[in-house]
Amino acid sequence: MSRAIRWLLPHPLLTLLLAVVWVLLQNEVTAGMIVFGIILGIIIPSGTSIWWPDTPQGFRMGKMISYSFMVIWDIMVANVQVAWIVLTVPNAKLKPAWIVVPLDLLQPEAITVLAGTITLTPGTVSADLSDEGHSLLVHVLHTDDPDAVRDEIKSRYEARLKEIFS
Amino acid sequence: MTSEIILNYATALSLLVGSGFVSVGAIGLLKFNDSMTRLHAPTKVGTVGIGMLLLASMLHSFALGDTSFHELLIMAFLFVTAPISANFIAKVNIHRQACETPPSPPRDDTWSTLNSPEASEETAEKVEA
Image (cartoon, helix red, strand yellow):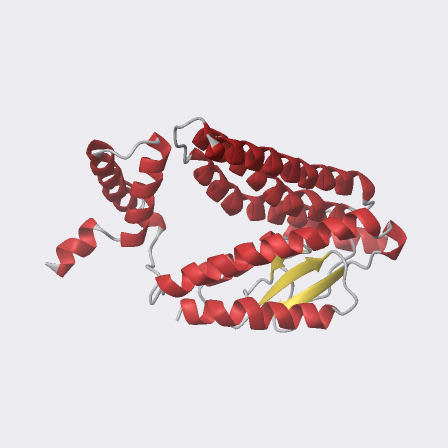
């Protein structure tokens, strides 16, 4: 029984996501659209499962939701800061810097979420990953203390992601 | 009736805030003079600017009496794709050495963008020249 379910739903969260996206795309919540969304959510993951060999293990949904709200709040706060930098700091006084973040995360999904978070929070862009995937290269727009930015990324985002993908 | 007025004012307010952020992004794109710092302004300020414009669109459709959730999807897709385009622009900058060369990583040999036969040949040519 559980093998049948695993064959039918290799990625249950992806199935749910596809169904929700389909209903939102239709802009109307009717029984037919929900059923069709679920059918799509079953066909697409099993059709593309060759490219998704490893199901991420131990994903904590509740912590991920609270993490997203924290990131959205950070995006809004930091947007005002970057707008302020753009409007007030002259080019000559701007202090951009490269910082290297050593990674404790191992799963590719977790590293992807971390890199996306870093890029979305203004002031920092994740630029590159080292060839073995042990460090992340981040560009900062304006900072006096690059080490503090690195420590903040590690304590604020990476520690939480380690709990989510554990 | 009053709720319609409130929604109209909220629409106008979020349009103003959104267009303010989008124009700050455009100013940043024009003002900065280095390709890496230039990347920061539009990719960041753009997300909140466009988010506010989409919020205005949602509020307007509520004011007209029908609900629309397409904007939520646009926002979600934007938040998923914006980091990828920023990452690719940054990779091109590193690859073409249009910016300061980044410090090498502590535990590994090099950055994955620089880890290609063409890139190492180019560096060798530059050193020779």
